[in-house]
Length: 115
Length: 117
Figure 1 (cartoon, rainbow over the protein chains, first blue to last red):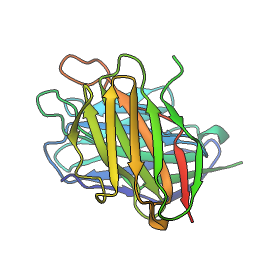
Figure 2 (spheres, rainbow over the protein chains, first blue to last red):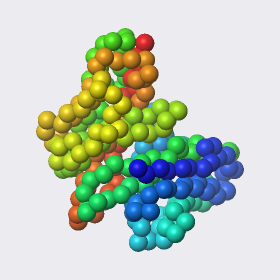
Figure 3 (cartoon, rainbow over the protein chains, first blue to last red):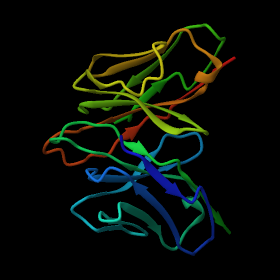
Figure 4 (cartoon, each protein chain N blue to C red):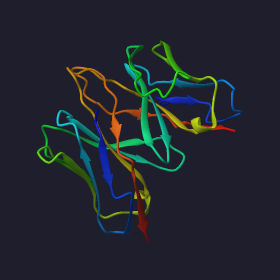
């Protein structure tokens, strides 16, 4: 089955600086890579996703890059703000014929924004 | 839309007791997923349903765990008998998946924090 590795487990950055979280996956057939943000006491919330036919996607201060050859993808957050403090999860999935399948998650990165 | 609704939010039970967790997915979503979250193992997929049919339950840890989806608007995850190592946060998520679906994103509920003593 799919295996997703995520690094680092904890990341502390100064407010206003950029943060980068990296993930690798094992199954070369995976073609959907979402990122989730989880705040304390809440469920994970989708913040951005990318499909295998795209190398980069941006949404305001957030961007995701994908390198299918190397089987890794990254989340980039620019101009970090206190509200960005949370646990971030990467995930991967293999869609077979467009049918449903479950996401395999990384272990998460605790992002701390220092004021 | 109220989102994915899970109940109860917190459950404390004694070892050996039966526990039932409930989930109401977003209306119109055709897929429902049960995940378990612990510090050691992160988010683990337990089982998922597509159009109310269980597709993959290979993540269900033991026969003590069972899940049902009697209709498109309700699912349960049951643990019988419960054990202390079952203590975790259990999340339900739903999505609209399939060919032509514009959005593959999952919407998670707020979770049920289960403590077995």
